[in-house]
Amino acid sequence: MPNTTRLPLLSRISPLIWLPISITIIGLFFISLASPSEAKSFGSPTYFLERQFIWAIVAFLLYFIATKIPVNLLFRHSIWLYLISIVGLIIVLIPQLGHQALGASRWFRFGQIGIQPTEIFKLTGIIVFSQIFSQAKYQSLKYLLYFLCPPLLLILLEPNFSAVVLICAITISIYYLSGASLNDLVILSLIGLASGCILVVTSPYRLARFNSLTSPDSQKSYHSQQLIISLSAGGWFGKGLTNSNQKFQFLPKISTDSIMAVIAEETGIVGIVAIFYLYLTLIGHLFKLSKKVIAPYSLFVAGIACWLAFQALVNAAAVSSLVPLTGVPLPLISYGGSSLVSLIVAFGLAKNIESKYAK
Image (cartoon, rainbow, N blue to C red; front, side, top):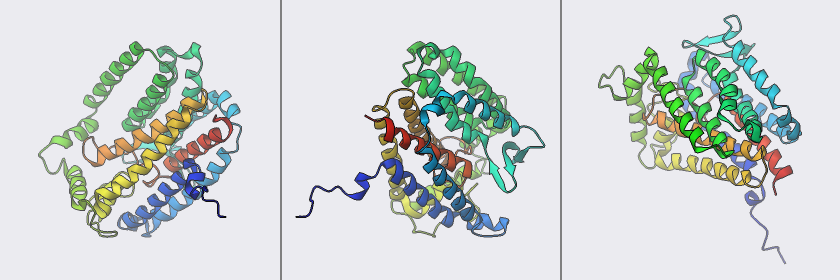
């Protein structure tokens, strides 16, 4: 007799394998649809697709390596990851080494390969803070600020305010999950709110971005208006694949920051809900896994879930013009090698932990 209790294939494969692969393929598909008009200025309509495909291959090779390495040693020596990340954040600020674009110095290059240390720090930072906060003697506001302030200051100098906000949200979440006191969380929230307001009002370009959200001036709010047009044009079921009008140079950074708007225009609310369902499934699995393993692995896995959740939410808020368009990519979907590789390696480490330490 056939085995009627046999589970479907996907139920026997960890979501930490099939979900990252599925979302990355969706990303490649929509980059192929959204980027040709933008890519023509680089000499080929498939410029972004070709590069992202290569990054995807590299990412999943590193995923495989991440599933095999001894994670206990990685966490035990995580301070070295922290120091290496700090060096990377310093390198991009050196004029001869850092690559500047649109007034910011966020990359350094090896030939044609561009690397963004901030994206790498999101991963190494989660490893480091998970290790630190898993030890009772380091569970204090003093140590959080001691290890968090140096990288934040370097990232602000790039400048990359959105990354600072995202890293703060992830780190504070890990601190909270480690058992932080309510007083510490209140103090952190007040410090973060005050610092954010000061950074916005003292920076003309940041203040201009916030003003553009509510300004009736069509020139100031042009990008916000184009994003809303794209979102509203899709309706429930979209205009059909390849039928987006806004992707023809009306949207800013079409294949990176604004790719969700193209997806919404072509597939509608249904398409966006489907993508966020995949995100929520992966986030839910990570949080469930965090309850099956001990610290620091539990904090690390939960930190990866927070990273994915916060980054997707910030991108969605920016595309919806609830917050300024700030350069936060849609996880695994937007064009960008450093972001893709960092997240995929994070999932590989989580799969490693699931295989070896889950009860």
